[in-house]
Image (cartoon, rainbow, N blue to C red; front, side, top):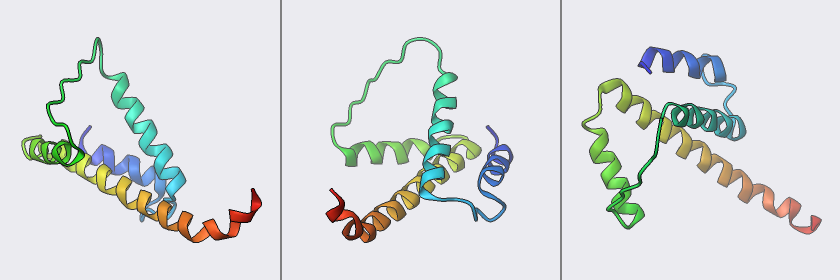
Length: 105
């Protein structure tokens, strides 16, 4: 996918200024995006991960992204940042709302 296609998909989904983005619909969008990526993979997938910690895996990912084509790298890094940002919002909201629902069980 080229960056312009990606930009258009994001704006169609969330509005021109991302004004319709919420933790829930961001998660749904990213899930659909992931499903589309998996559908393009044909045949057997072999996991050959030599890294054993989350930190090592992150370092390896960021190192490899430096060598990706520009559009692919921008999209991957944007998606990662978008996911982390909205995940953080979701965690903050859960912490704030937890006291309201704690006694409902």
